Length: 189
Image (cartoon, rainbow, N blue to C red):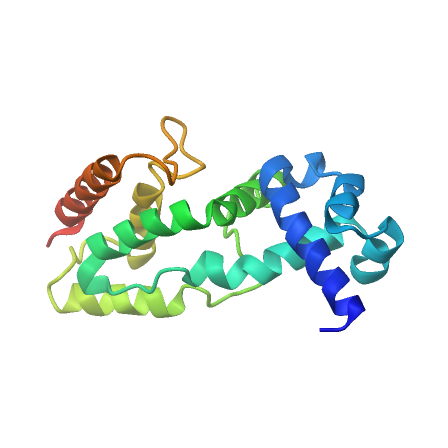
């Protein structure tokens, strides 16, 4: 990696932490530059402005946000608990998506530049409904939205309790067990 690529990488890493913590409006280019050991001119040369930098950070994390846990529609409880674990390991994914929702896309599909980002998941859910694994009375988009929302009950976006990696293992297991059982019951045919 050459010096320019290394600087760009440091800027993206610093910006990820900054945006995840402070959002788009609260993020400061000065802090990002200082953390990255780069100057603001370099940041502007690579990304244009703070909005462009957020776009680069969000775009880089988009695949992880959308595909961090593969969906097996025949195992919705496993999908939900897999998301729970992913939020512990990568809380910045939830935070970046939450800031984007709050500051940019208040309604509708959050990921507007990927029309088919959920197409495979929705097809998998529809197939599982057809095969008798999921209640067929529910729209696949509703199943996906509800399972994802349920998995976020203890995420950094939770309005009640946000789980932390250093919570007791027994606490994580209790939550995941409750999540799995609730998802299992909610979507049973």
